[in-house]
Structures are given as structure tokens and as C-alpha cells.
Amino acid sequence: MKPLIVLYYHRILPFEGYDIDVNTFRWQLSFLKKHFDIADPEVLYDLKKGKKLKKSSVLLTFDDGFLDNFVYAYQILKEFSAKALIFIITSKVRSGGINKTTEDYTNNLFIPAKEENALKKSLYEGDLSEFLSWDELKLMKESGIFEIGSHSHNHVRIFSSDKKIGEFQTDSKVHWSYEFALGKKPKIKDPIYPMKSYLATRRFFEGKWEKEEDYLKRVEEDLKTSKELIKKHLGFDTPFLSWPWGEFSSESLEIAKKLGFEFCFTTQKKAFFKDDFCLIGRIHAPKSKKAFIRKLLSNKYYLTAKIYAAMHK
Image 1 (spheres, rainbow, N blue to C red):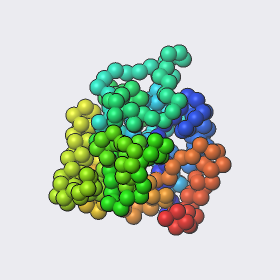
Image 2: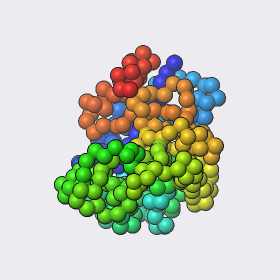
Image 3: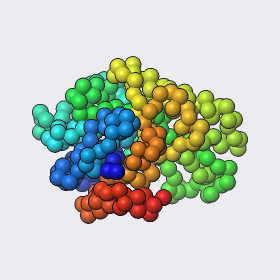
Image 4: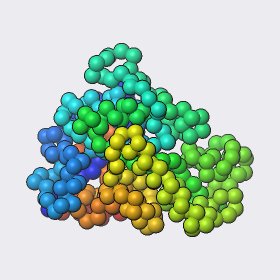
């Protein structure tokens, strides 16, 4: 059985920095074209119908819905006649407007910030300037280059335990959504607790545990809102869901299935062998060429892919 390797990306930058730059991305696509089939997301429907891959294949996915995916990645994918699946945080999508892209312009392009703080700024300042608009997503979908999936509506972490692991200090390295989890601006000696995705756990907040029924209602409202917004703005009912940080619970998984998500993606480090279409593993695309080659070739064949998965549980 040939494996389907699902790679996941976040940002494609016009400079070398905190994520993959355009030159590295172009090299990666060139490597994939030589050694693999770059699959259309439609391959998932074929696999679900029982069809087999003729060749080891790679499905490209992008998380969060950053604007650089349109300005830079979109055009490079076109160059290689490659397709991809993008998972958007629907609360982060801008209301309108289409940016310039590298296809038609060489000047005045959108340049991402030099530091990765777009999610934090969008949460606390309402700054969506680093994210895609509905108009851009519509164009990307209609081009046939991208399919669109959900990456939830809210995309934050919350306290997942009542076991304190520290106290906040001015130099504390906490997750960017710590303030959201705490429910206020943090002060010195405020408690720090373990955190998980908003969709993966009941919330421990202000010294109390959220009721189970409130947790289930919250998850359903989030996923339902995301699905409905995609249908409202883009005109179709997406079957694709990528769990934020790859985190979910058995309850949230059942809610996703009930809402019509047929293909759910995790961050489990493994190739996909048609075992469970709602637990599709993905492998992060590294910046290093050596690491990229090693990961891809380790998952190209059945036996080596199984060994890789076992080593990365």
C-alpha cells in the first residue's frame, strides 16, 4: 500500500525568518515534483471509495489562513501546477479586498511582520491585517489551486488543569493566548496552569471547572459557526477540518462528525494509510533541506513510514 504523506505549513515568507521563505518553498515543490505525486485534495474522496494510490503521494496543507499564503504561496503553487488545502480560522478572515500578488506585481507587495505575533495581535487588538480576506479565499478556491477547510472559529487555548505549574512574572514565557485563558490582563503571581485547545477540553476558569454540557455546547457552536461562515461567504459546505494544535477530545471528534466534517486532520507524525479519515496524521514541513528530504523519504514506502510513525508517537 502506498502512503499519502500530508505535509502542513503555516507561512511562506518573502524573507528568511521564523517560517519557510519563498525560495525554500519553491525548492521543496521542485523536490516533491521529482520524487512524488503532489495530490489534489480530491484524492481523499478516492481513497474513501477504496481506490489505491499508484505512487507515493504528498498532500499539501496550510493552517491558519495567513495573507502570505495568497500573495506568495498561491503563485508558486501555480508555477508547479500543484494544489493544496488551506484551513482557515474563520474569526480571523478579513471582510474584503484583494491584495496584489507576485503574479502581476513586483513592488508594493504585502510584507509580513518580522516577528510572528499575528495571532496574538488579532486576538487582543483586532488586527487582521496579516490574514486572508473572503474575497481572496473565493479567488483561491475558484482557481482550483486551493480547497478550503476549517481550522475552527476561535483558535485559542484555555486552562486544561487545576494543577498550578507556576506563577506569572514579567519574564514568563507563556502561550500567546494565556491572557485569554486567564480572562484578564496578567499580573505578577497570577497562576499558570497547563493549557490545551479551546476544542479539546473542559475549561478551568476562575477556580471552577466548566460543566460538561457547557463544554460540548461551546465546541458545537465553534465548529458550526466556522462551517456556516465558509458556506455563507464561499458557497460550499466544507468537509475538511484541521484541529488547532492537533488537539481534540473524543467528544469534540463526535461533534465534528455530526456536523459533517468527513476528513479531520491532526498533527500526529505519520503518513496516512486509509485507517481513519477523521484521524489523518500530518508531518510538519521543516525549513532545513536535509530535514525535509529525510522526512519525505522516511515516509515514501509502507515499511519505513510505519517505522517513522512508531518512532514519533
